Length: 114
Length: 113
Image 1 (cartoon, rainbow over the protein chains, first blue to last red):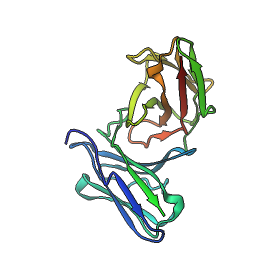
Image 2 (image 1 turned 45 degrees about the horizontal axis):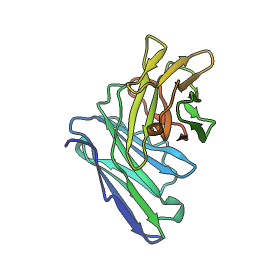
Image 3 (image 1 turned 30 degrees about the vertical axis):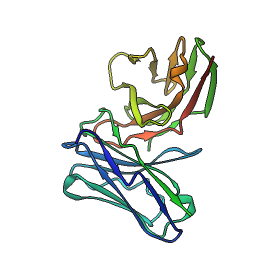
């Protein structure tokens, strides 16, 4: 596609429910990132996929968070048993993966946990 | 692991005044450094980057940043700001190659007339 696509753009859920956030990277990009943006916290790294390598999960805040990338393309971020503190904008970005290249960001999913 | 510090959460400035947004990083190895900008109601986009070579890098809209290895800094400067520069600015670092990009907490630049 022309850019990084994220869906849904907005998600309202109840505390304790599970949610899935989807990211469609730019075709051919081997690197894919998930970040979380919340007030006062800036841009928090969550997880990084690079080609066929094992993902860098060092930023996932708890075991309620998981992500997968199928076929080296689409990625899904899953949050189980959501909590109010999970409310934030979840951003996905992709890049060509060669190092030092720019990231292309999606417009994000605004998650609100009531 | 690398980290990025942006000490100023908000920088108010008058139009046509100079501005400096500070960024310091911690890493024991060579790094790539970036500034990203997020304009109101828009997505993040790359402003400029340092990979190697000249330590002074420039953007197309008049911003520049200088890589200072001894001070582990990559401050962003502009000699004369415009109202349209109002945005949030994020500094980021990676250790090069196939390494994740880590962002700072951002600095909100507020330019007033």
